[in-house]
Image (cartoon, rainbow, N blue to C red; front, side, top):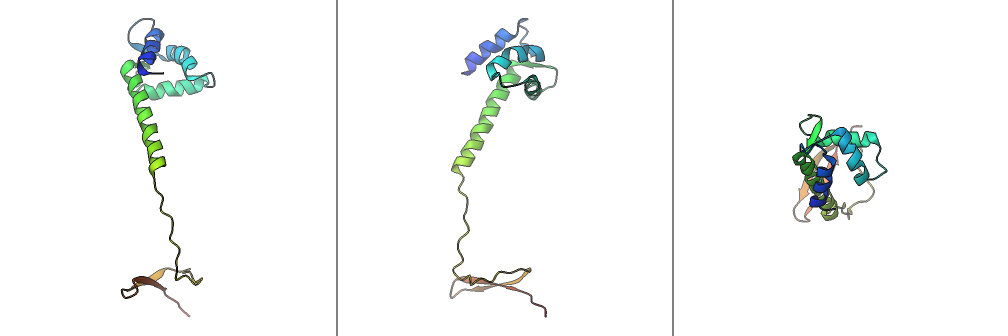
Length: 124
């Protein structure tokens, strides 16, 4: 459904043509549009989220801003998830099965071999 169609539903839901919807008007008209699976409490929560200035009514600016910003947020989140490249740990070719259990105390660089070595403090 495009924004113009939603605007028509919004205008139809406003019988006084005042440009604002009460919670009751919103639930009656947009409950059908949003699907029968939503209960009244969900719709009341959604109304409160859309009512940016908390004046117990929503105007077209609040409603359309919520729709556009909500869809932009969903698009960004989807894009981030699809385009994210997660780094995989590289296998350690020098690993001979010894791992530090304690805090690493020193890191040494071997420039000839282009490798780093770690050391831990051993107290006997």
